[in-house]
Amino acid sequence: MEGRIDAVVFPGQGSQRAGMGRDFFEQIPESRCAYEEAADALGWDVAAICFADDERLHLTEYTQPCIVTTEIAMLRGLSARYGFSPALFGGHSLGEFTALVAAGALPFAAALKIVRERGRLMQEAVSVGAGAMTAVIADELNPEVIGRLLDGLLVDVANANSDRQLVLSGETGAVAEAEIRLSAALSGLPALRFVRLNVSAPFHSRLLEPILDPFAQVFRELGGSLDPVAARRVTSNYRGGFHSGDREGVIESLVRQISHTVRWKQNMVCLASGADAVWEIGPGRPLREFFRTIGVACTSVTTREAAERAFAVAA
Picture 1 (tube, rainbow, N blue to C red):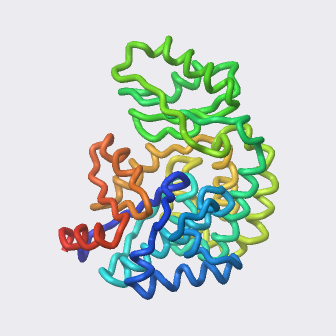
Picture 2 (tube, rainbow, N blue to C red):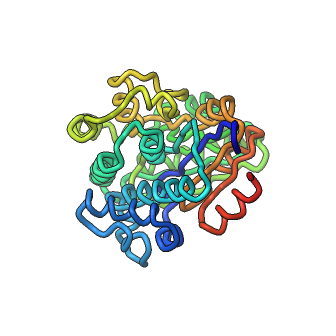
Picture 3 (cartoon, helix red, strand yellow):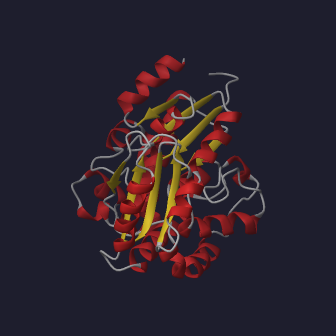
């Protein structure tokens, strides 16, 4: 691995699962310390919620810090055991915050408090059932064309994940109408289908705009130690490329990410162009298939056993 440039990416909300990170916690002291640091920062037992069948794991206010904790615990474990030291970082939606911590741009404790408030604000922004999200899956999807087809509907392109998957987000009835409209307009696309997502709010849509100012205030209060220079190694979901290194620009991008499209395909292209190898670290592996659509291999590590296999090959 010496001399190789590694990029690491972190999945976001939806990747959580009961028991996530437990094997790292039990087998690697550096990973265990991450969970203990998180408990100290948040005032509740993060490990207990991650490892047990606890319904709070699926409540956004808890989900977000639990995922960030697990991903950082895993990364620290891989660094301790295998000397893993990535140079470039990216994360999908919530995962962008993990990426900033991993890059040294945002202190771990501060990030946990920020994403806890981010989750609370997102959860409270829209009444349960008022919003919905659906994945649009087909070959050769064009975000601009689909955006035009949504004209007049309270629906936005939430995630531009790849040429084969976009996610729409918005008012529940409007999302249903969007599915009907796109089914008619794109009927010629191979294997066109829609998959409703089990989410608690219409993330990355204009329905979340009312929480942008409150979240900006939260970030300014808790993110005082943000290092914008270190953030230059992290891709911005909102802008598509790497963060600029300007403090206000980084904050604006993270705030506006909440109600705007996650430009994940652009993030992948940027990371892959500068790296010799791409790794996905987290409790799930949704990002590996997206990299495959741009012809890039991505090694996913979701468990200690997977890490043993992956790093044995890499060595």
